[in-house]
Image (cartoon, rainbow, N blue to C red; front, side):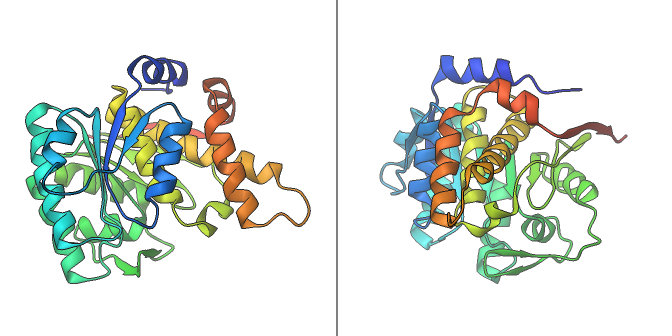
Length: 274
């Protein structure tokens, strides 16, 4: 894949109008639901073990986010993930805070070993931890060395778990274990608001639910959030703060187009490995 066809993905999104089932964290659930609505999908946040199997069966994609992990939600993740696999419904994992505590890390690895995921999106420390490379996480924030090769890390993770991987940060990478795509859109203000990573995961899930391939969904989802973040910053005026930035970010998620994405995307594609 030498370039991504944003117009094709946009058309698939319009035709399919995916129902995106989230088992996610209470800190960012509202933001994730709103970004799915802004982009043309339908969010549902059902997370009780009594209904997750039924809910995921009627959904287009399942988003699992470990942000505020609990025993009950972990049980729901297992049940929903298994049912989604049975039904052929794509599943995406956001291993928030993997590496922060032993239980959280164990839970993330258990899910990776028992559920077949289409995509995993995390920051460098989370992916480093899950790939067995001793990543350290501070709370749920990234804490890694500057010399870490994100391309090799993405390849390692994708190869080990046979899943497409997205690592987001100052620069972003997406890999399916064979090729690596480097992305460099975005703005530092995205790190100053709660939920930008979780929303990115939800958007990738939305594109998976619209039947984009895992790599296409990863590139499109990460680019959509990053470009919206750039545009939101460009709209700020004197004395605007992070509240204004968050509002403008959502505005741009609601108005972003394939033309805008194709014009602004900054991607180095298809670094092939044997």
